Amino acid sequence: MLSDSKLSMVRAATANRLKLSPEFGRRFLVTVDTEEEFDWNGPFERQGHTTVSVPKLKRFQEFSGKLGIRPVYFVDYSIVQNDEARAFLKSVCDDGSAAVGVHLHPWVNPPFEEEVGPANSFSGNLPKELEEAKIVHLSDAIEQATGKRPICYRAGRYGIGPNTFEILTKLGFVLDSSVRSHFDYSQEGGPDFSEFGPEPFWLGDNREMVELPLTTVLSGMLRKQHGYLLRMMNRSSLSAALLSNLKVLERIPLTPEGITAREAMEAIDVALDDGLKLLVFSFHSPSLSPGHTPYVRTDDDLDRFYDWWREVFEHLRAQDVAPAGMDDLLQNSGLAGK
Image (cartoon, rainbow, N blue to C red; front, side, top):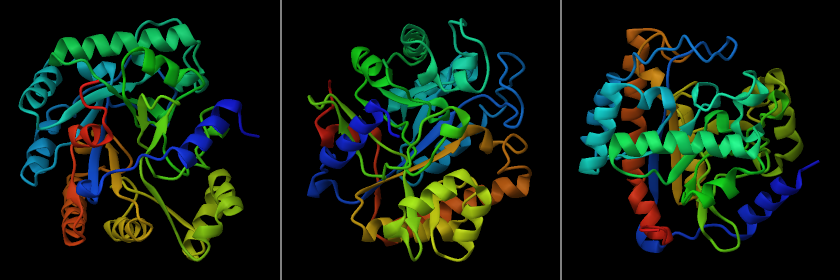
């Protein structure tokens, strides 16, 4: 059963979709969950993490900039404590070549009052006051590093909760990008986004904040009748593999992590055919350095990672889908300057 807060969000996603102007055209946004390296299969720990991928951010920024792409770096506390990262983030904010937002990993983000574990790795499960205090602490650190107050948010592990949007609105945020469309984390104690598609929508009756879901595309013979099948996919990796292999239902997030360029280009074409005007790509910054994520283990993997982007960017160009920066989106939605 859906909670009252989720029911409200689903209704908003359906009734209050963000209408982008014809002049905005068809665009794409590249976002980076900019975070420390840690063992994705191990327990959550406050200590013992590294930030060796920080120097690799500059390469990705230069690679993107040559193509006119202005990424959004959603930054967590471990990153903003790194001097090299702070200098990098200030430079891209100063020259407008990228935007910086908040990315909350509660287990490494002060204040430390909660028990560390799977449930509390989703910040939306924390008491309201503690969730807010962690967001404030990280926002202050980012503002100190960059000179700009962040107004965009993505919860680590996509872990929004019943108080998150009230907190964000209170703190002056105007955009959230925590919804990972068509994914369900409820078995781990997190949120269920099964019912959410990739279309941006307004949060709240006063249109004070936009929700910008990460783009996930459903493909396959039964994609229009996906309800029960998607629930099966979310609860069983075996069912997901079987349905995908049979081309009955495929769930394709727009990311180079675990998704081939061919799959991503197929998803792009399906999304454009469905009329989606804004595609949101994402990946984790530790993938920029071999050996820190399951997706980039070797130097060859890293070469393939950049080749993935080259193929996908070329496909987007051929489809007349132009890059967008966060400022473009905020201006088009009327949120710039708020």
